Image (cartoon, rainbow, N blue to C red; front, side, top):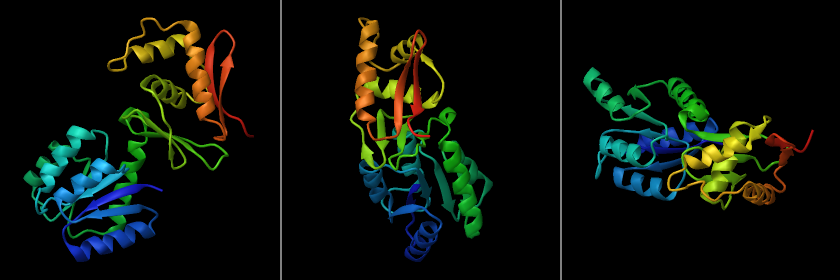
Length: 234
């Protein structure tokens, strides 16, 4: 279920949007001003944001700039009464992914949100990667943070473990070579591959296997080639 943060200071509109978005299958958290929105963004993980520009305490435009500095891949849809071309250009240039003016049709808002969320899940957009399995505990890897989840449970991962898992998820069902893993590690900030022996890879693989227990997924050794993430159930 996609999690959304709705930032809107109009009580009636905010309550109505929360109800309709929840009915459409979203989990919605609401904020009435920019300050509350920033606090929620610092303490929670969201899949997308619906943002009004005319907010008290901290303006919507400042909230947008704040989001782009800290959460560059988070999809943001501006929902505002400011319908001038200059306003739309300013909002998009500040980092909004889409811009919808009031009044609006709910069907259009839902369609635009759906498109944003689908696009954000693609690896090329730095989004969240979800790997379906026959287990109820789906594996999800955040492509912008060293973080992953099995169902609703966060996995405790080191930087290298997360980089390895993220690579295996993006190449699920295909063999990932040892060289590809080392190359991925070499691009991680503050992490060098110096001193990483071949047998050290097996240690990381073993750790990840243990953390994926009961997920319906397994990391298989492909002799002489590398590793492959695959489903363990038909």
